[in-house]
Picture (cartoon, rainbow, N blue to C red):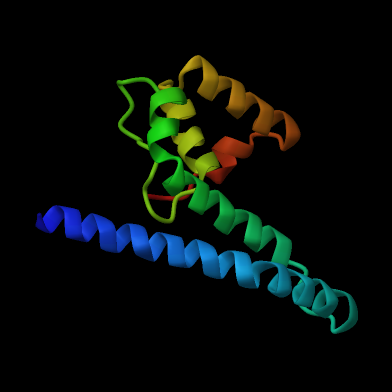
Length: 124
């Protein structure tokens, strides 16, 4: 029963976070665009947002990605907090533990940005 209560609490927190994201993200995005254009704010805003969305996607889709992008021999599973999808792909690419689907995604990313997955690997 305790496990179920923790599950419900965590699920509730997730939905509250999604609701707040939906409410504030559009306003925050528009405000940031205006700040970048008219107030000379940092132009790294979009890059930083992309990285954080990538980290979020790695955690949110960890079970899907572990089932489709890597082999059972992989020691680098998706879902590690702070790690991007690209970094995880790069580690598995290096270890040759990407599935056919994982290799296809890594190839797409590496074609758009040369050696993207490999260059995404940080020192662990």
